[in-house]
Length: 137
Image (cartoon, rainbow, N blue to C red; front, side, top):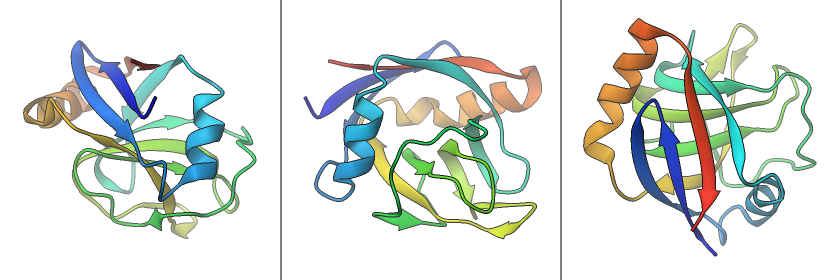
């Protein structure tokens, strides 16, 4: 299945895996499904929320990587000069950390619920960490 549902902070989004562009990242993430965690607001990158993953190793390198995900794009930074993380852009993002510019693998794109992205980001910014769940359809 290349579609999934993401529930975060009380909002629900339909999404698709970017299987052709990021096959290794998609396969590694699917192996973790359903994936449940918390999102917090980014510190350096702009309008995004992220799942800090520390030293987690998904066993993937760079593929379909970008420093500027569009709103509704989800990227996986596989680790290296900064900790592993998953980031969801809800507005303008210049993906970076205290170590400098980063690039993450764009592996999921939201296909519905985009009108709620800014509300999700604002909720995380002002209310703190929110639950997030990724599950296949």
